[in-house]
Length: 257
Ligand code: ADP
Ligand code: MG
Image 1 (cartoon, rainbow, N blue to C red):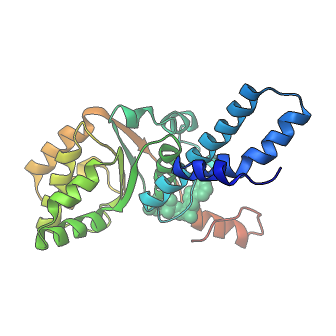
Image 2: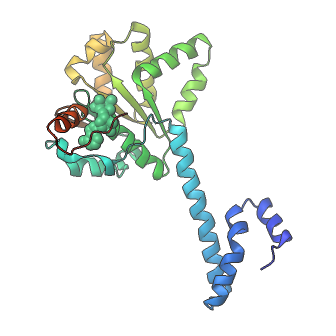
Image 3: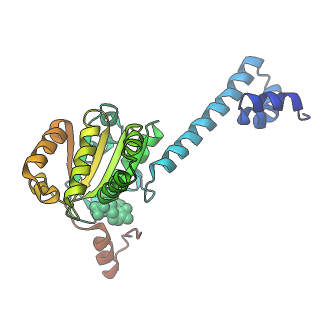
């Protein structure tokens, strides 16, 4: 089929690049298979819709700013026998995010907290949700800079546009008073409006150490634990485990970042 300039211009005006690219091939195929006009049109529009959805997922994943590509399918559950796999698979259905609930992944370094947080975040992106990944100190710094530049409202609007915020590595570094206050502000903004996935090495009882204030930490935990999914990840560091296995001549491969 010769290219049809007028048709391609209409596609441009209507922003239908896949229709423009695929109509010729699909028309030939439908003619060969004796499929009617309605089937042709339906098939063609399906291709356009699918391509848009794929692009939207890629865009949402890019905008989320994940530090690595991790998925639930790449998570080795045998490394953490005490972790309830079904519970993680349930969380990856992302219903909790739609319900504006939070999840806290607690465990020592290297057990895969960040891996699972990213995996859940990417799953959310695939399901049409808007996500942003921050480290706790990174977000505290963004707040501090925004205060200096008087752009806190802009930062908060960007936060409010998301369905899920991932806050990684809370507790690795004690927060200064300003950082603690900024993160309190962040949690108040999110309360019952935006889902948060938090990763931390410290159990809730140690959180006053992170925030440096018993009373405010109490208030924060009261809100956070109102509707929260606590995932305890107890076990050995996956990286160390992998290394040990290699030293022993085992074939378990640790993913190095
Ligand atoms: P944490 O955030 O708990 O310190 P990470 O998620 O950064 O740990 O994990 C460290 C590295 O080990 C990452 O590359 C991660 O993908 C990998 N990893 C950890 N646990 C697992 C697991 N159970 N299955 C597959 N990879 C894992
Ligand atoms: Mg981590």
